[in-house]
Amino acid sequence: MGASSGASEPLLPRAGGDGSLAMVIASTGVAVLGSFVFGVSIGYSAPTQSKIREDLQLSLSEYSFFGSIITIGAMIGAVASGHLADIAGRKGAMRTSALVCIVGWLAIFFAQVPVFIAEIAPKALRGGLTTLNQLLVCTGLSVTYIVGTMVTWRVLVIAGLVPSIILIVGLSFIPESPRWLAKVGRQKEFEIALQCLRGKDADVSIEAAEIKEFIETIENLPKAGVQDLFNRAYIRPVIVGVGLMVFQQFVGINGILFYASETFVSAGFASGDLGTILMGCIQAPITAVGALLMDRSGRRPLLLISTSGLLIGSLMSAVSFYLKIHGLFLEQVPIIALTGILVYIASYSIGMGAVPWVIMSEIFPINIKGIGGSFVTLVNWSGSWAVSFAFNFFMSWSSSGTFFLFALVCAVAILFIVNIVPETKGKTLEEIQASMNSSST
Image (cartoon, rainbow, N blue to C red; front, top):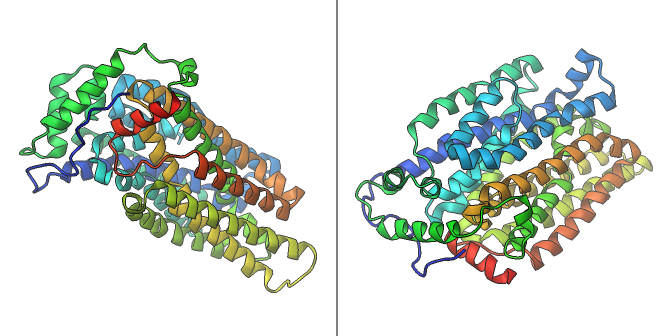
């Protein structure tokens, strides 16, 4: 989402081992409730598509607009979230998000969940804890996929409000991001928050000095605006962040998630319920595996494994629809399609779903983190809207051609990751941002 001192951030607090990470974990747990709500909202249309179209008598084009409405709300949130997070704080942005969700599931991505987690976590745990954002998104998706086959779509809407209410209450019991407090000059609160997160007996003097030194360096720079994102000093993080978000969306994930039920029916299944439930069952466990591997294997290997699997899953799905159109191996077509979609979902869940958000939260210096995060998120949700709106029309044009196009995007994404995306594992935020700056000069 500068400069760096030579001292490194401690892997764990030096003292106060009992419960020294408890507040970090508790704060992360509260923050990712917003991610769970988000997963519920984007998973909502998959199991309910046929029921909504029938009850509301919507045509294909009308439902495509309905299915893309959530992305329009998220685009609004993306534009406002950076400034809101810089002015009201990370907790203030998440509280606003929860309140807005209660009145309509709109602009969910006011919440700067990955940024908040990255700013409170020790570097040895930052990747794994930040990945909990995507894990809870997938959990929300999975729960919605499964429950949505059992209850009416109206009941599902009401149930989605419960975690938002819990989030609002929970935010009252966790500290604000120490880095944000230091940035806005609230020195006493900065020290209290950092001590709370690292344990009451922990020595936080070195970490506090590093944060303050970095922020003092950043504060000497001019106030950043959108136009500053394209300055030479920041262009590499912008390219990395925007590129990853573009590929995250244009591999086709939201089209597949939003219209999973109809996709399985078009592949030859009598009902989309089985495929939708299986998708729900695999997403959260595989995302959890990705979270465990994040700080062991690194970001780039997970991205490469993920995009390679997406390529294979897209090709399998494309071949299944091609065989169906030409009347070949019709008995095997549904199994090939189901396998391809499950390979696709599993591959996305282990890397491409979570890692771009982790990297986005790491690469932008604090002075442009708000505006940079907003810009990258806006690009992400613009792509999400385009895919979710156009997916049904592309499937009507050519179901096999649609998945062949997704496979082509996956292949280009692999080249982008190999040549452009840096490895951030095991580095402090200040070290990451300093290396990005040095490579841009």
